[in-house]
Length: 307
Image (cartoon, rainbow, N blue to C red; front, side, top):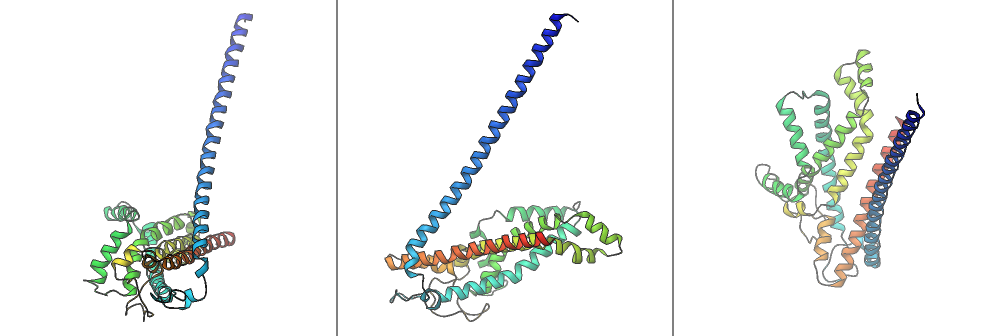
């Protein structure tokens, strides 16, 4: 081999090595830029949340007292006005959502993941419907609740349980999707081992799959209820009144209101005192949402460690 050929190969190899280094450097630059954009988005989101909390705390702190939780709303004595009916109404509504959305959502997720034949057209149609319903605006569910729950065919009237069923329709797709992901994350080897030991399909699902999917199911349920507790438009359509000076008698009788609806009623008033009351109610609602999300994270971390 001549010296000329050796020099040519050396030069070609040097060019290739230089190109590889440049490409690697370009990938690193792109990766670092992408990482910086992600960090910027996180910082902006945290700053917006911190600004919101600071503003709401500054406006509502003067009225964040015991009267806010124990007194009835009033249009006369604003120094002692509270939103006790809204708190009780929210509790009734959320209890109704909890007892309806969990069995429906988990059962639907179990059927689609463990029993449904994906070759059947109706099972594929159900999956498409669930994916699409997750993106439907909340006002549409309010219209459906007014047409089919408050009026015929159920004809429950403007009661708290009608609001619960409406919010159940709203968050049910989210619960189904989260539960399906949790069930799908259970290792298939666990199912195979259970059935190899003689367990039936139902015993495997009940004793192995559901316990393994509990962290994801709980997380999805709590996050869905966190969304439901802050909804206003569907409740306004299904009969939640904006001003109630009595406690709701139960989920199936009597007029009711909720915390977001009461905040809406306060914030549209022109008086500054009502704006302060609305800010205090917003602060309570934000803190409640943060607590619910924190509980979801804690439950997921605890069950993940145990599993």
